[in-house]
Length: 135
Image (cartoon, rainbow, N blue to C red; front, side):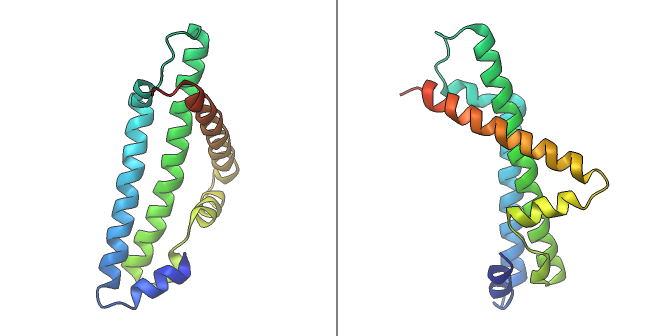
């Protein structure tokens, strides 16, 4: 990611382009947050035949998973935005750098555990999504 950011920053409007990419990522994180909080993903699933407890579990897993993904993408957006503002590709990073950045905060271990649990929840939700997706 840093190499890509470095290449973009060499372009005449590189800082602007990298800033736009950061804004797009932030918008994506916002959309994932909305989807997780409002649970709009449930409209894509046919869960009527499932027990209510299973329906609730799918909904909770989906909400947690979407919010964890939103947090991770939001941190990636912040790193890209910092790289654009400072014209320093060293700030840019992908998901690995975002997780490292979360790990260096005061609540780093807890944040990483929460994100890991959220990713696991999203994986389980994806299995349920594949089994119950409307045609």
